[in-house]
Amino acid sequence: MKISRLLVAVILSVASWTGASFGQTAADRVALKAALSGEYFARTLGWDDEAKPRTSTLKTYLALAHVNLQLMEGFDIAVLAGYASSDPSGVSFKKLPFSIDFEAGAVSGYVLGAEARKSLFTYQNFEISAYGQFVVYRGVEKSWELEGLSVDGTVELAPAWTRLALGPVVAYRRFLNFTPYFSVQYNRLSGTLEMRQNIQTLAGIEKKAIKAKSPVALLLGGDYALTDEISLGGEVGIMPYQSSLDTSFKLKVQISFQ
Image 1: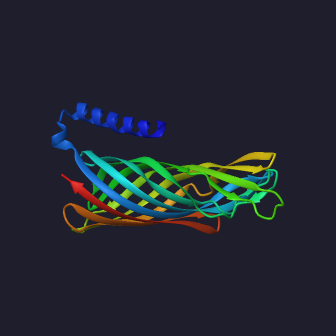
Image 2 (image 1 turned 30 degrees about the vertical axis):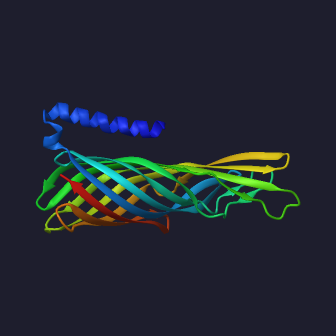
């Protein structure tokens, strides 16, 4: 797959550049970490319905495996892969032979991504880092029978979206085993929903662009070290939009291999 090859190429390029720049062997420098995370988010989407702006809510569950490389002190990169269940219910498709208001529930799919964190500086007990993440979701086509017609008819939905998160992270390192943190991020989610409809000789395809209304996320979380090798993490987030708030929740278990 093009996306997975691109992510691997980025990881290898950064690792090669780091080794050349600092003149260290991989054994001296690289630490491997593996993690499992679960995440839920609800995002308000904007989309057009016959030139009229409309909104609905995208509810998504993510289960991800992380493979993290610490290339040098304070600099980590990771590749992500896993499963997603994404529910775009509430979106209307009016350009098909028979209009559809999608209410069929979540669509399963796969997720690929990459993330990086770089420590910038410390001030007293605070550490300020730069963080970035890019995630791609591709849903497996969901199909169902049309009801209420005198003839057979089917519809299929193929959803896809990407999410880009960038921003500073402020961690408080005063405690021995617990590290709370706060982050303000640019958090952009956008994608497409493609609906296909077949009713005997009638067929139609409608592709609808979707985009999260709030581009800003406020995150509060913490990491707790159970041992030198195992840590637990949790995070809650809000994404303000007009008078409402979108939300996110995340849990993570990480194992380090020195």
